[in-house]
Every structure is written in C-alpha cells, then in structure tokens.
Length: 415
Image (tube, rainbow, N blue to C red; front, side, top):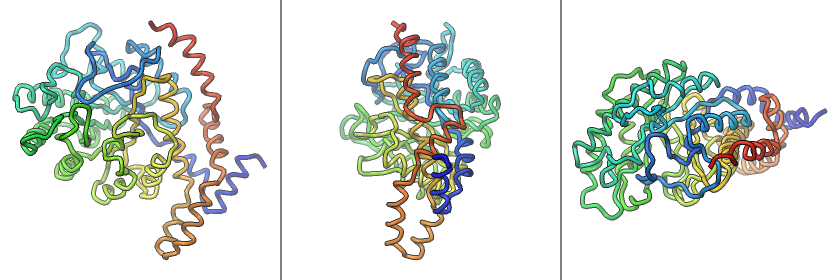
C-alpha cells in the first residue's frame, strides 16, 4: 500500500471521504492578486504609494510592465494546484500611452487582462483604486468634504462597476468588486459622523450605476487603521457591516489584517453567515495589524478555512489573497501564499466536521478534545502530495528550484 492509500485509510477511520475532498478543492476558485508582482505600483502613475499603502523592501526583479507582470503570474500559476481567479486593481489598466484618468476608465483598457484570464480559464475580480492619486485630497476620497473630490471618485467607482460587468460577461464568472479606501485622520477628529455620512452617500451613488447582481458582487471592506490615519477611519468595521446589511446586493468583505490584533476573522465568518447570503474575504497574515505578510499554513489561516467548510459555505464565500512583500522573491511570495491557502482548504475538507459537531451537541467535550488533538497528527502531507500530483504541480519544496531558475534567467535581467 503506497503512502496515499495508507493515509486515505487513516482518514476514512474518522469518516472522511478523501476523494470527495480532493474533487471539491480542485474546483474552488481563489483569487490571485496582481499587486504582489510590482509592489502595488500599477501602470497609471509614477509617484509614490499613498493613502495608507506601503510596501517595504527592494528585492530585485519586480515587474515593470504588464507583459512582465503577466509572465510572472503565469509562472506562479504553473506552481500552484487548484482553480484560480485573477484579482485586479483599477490602477492596472493597460493604457498603451493613452492619457486616461481613473474617472474615465473603460472596459477596453482591460481587454488584455480579459485575454489573459480566458487563456488560463479564470474569472476576474476587481478593485477600484482609491489611493496613490493627486485627487486623494488631504488623504480623503469618497468621504472628502470637497464635492469635486467626491465626484471624481464616485465617477471612478461607477466606471469600475461597468468594467466589472464587462469582466463577468466576458469570462462567464461573477466579478467581486471591492470598495476600500484609506480615508481617515492621523489624530482625533472633531467630527466622526460627517465623513461617514459622506462616505455612505458616495458608495450609494456608486451602487446606483446599473449592474446585474448575478454578475457583479459589490463589496465594502473595513479598515481599523492605516499609516497616517491611525486615529480614525471612515470605513470602520461597524460602518462597513452596517452598510452591507442595509443595502441589498452589497457584500461585506473581511480582510483579516483589518482588525485589532486580538480579533480573529475565523470567529467572524460564522457570525456573518448567519445573516448574509454571501460574504467575501481578503486573506493575508497580519503580524501587527495590516502588515500584509505572505500567507502561511498557520493556525488562523487553518481556522478560517475550517469555518468556511464547517458552515457548508464554500459556495457562499468569495476567497482572495491580499498581501505584498518586496523584501523577498515575489514569485516565491505569491506561490507560498497560494499553496498555503490551498493546504488550509484541503485540511479543512479532511476534518471530520460532522463527527466533531455531534460530540459538541452531545456535550462530549472530553472526547471532542481528544479527537481534535488526534486529528492534528493525521498524515495530511501524503494527501497533499497526491493532490498536487493530480494537478501536475510539485508536491514538495522542489518548486523553489524553478523559482531560482526563473530569477536567474528572467528577474535578474530587469534593471
């Protein structure tokens, strides 16, 4: 009996259908974020990152053009098992020398990304880019007291609704369109409600743009604080959840770096699923708030995946990665993060959730603890290796040799 068959038998002892778990994970789309490859710079501006965004490090070889970014993403795709989606920011419009500001973006500016997505059988998720732009006046966009600033960003959001509809129609996959801003204040504000009312009205006007709710999934993402906005953010957790709850067709998006260090999104997932038909996630690894470290196969990552599976919500949760690290090889960062979330999902699918729930409902808490501890040492690695082999990607760390070769042959020549 080979290692996979032996491991499969061990999981079956707990009532787990391993083949069903593998068949399930193969078809779970996870969004791969384009901004890891070029440190969130995008293609529509040459200035520094602003609006609460900061990337640290200067590892050589970052993508400088859309051609290089697509090539890098293709390398990552070749190293990762599972179904992918493409996650874009509006600042990654391919303008080819045309002078077009963000409030006038059109679907045609993303046609090459649609070609890329179709080539790899992927849907596309989208994000309006409310940062790194001269119209971020005093650090504010949709909540600005300046009506002309708000109008610019409202028009940008409406343009992104139209582009999202285009993505969904072209790929045949619903487009999750996430609204996030870094709007806030460095020190204690004199007025908290005013900015939030302007923010509310601005998002409502964006969502007044016609779209097919089956094809476009607008989200609002909260933020607890940001660089330069430590004291107050307009889009707090309470604001974003309340907005989504009060607006039909709008989803809450939780980024697990956007909460206080003692909060965990894994506990919030089942709470939101009690009320929302669908929710969205940005999966990262916060060491100190929103530090956007590469996702690892760590405890909270595993718990988030477990809650999605335990709640039977794989078809109700839109999953996307969101981190950026410029201090290490960017291809490796992408690959480690995607493979780590795949491991978390597979581990969750291999957990005997029905058995554990039954023990809890029977108040068999002693046995529940015993089995939870036993599950931790089941031969997960052998199931993971088999899954990777069926997907045609390396099962172990041997994938890194391909990254080293790519760095030597491609990345090192980018000056």
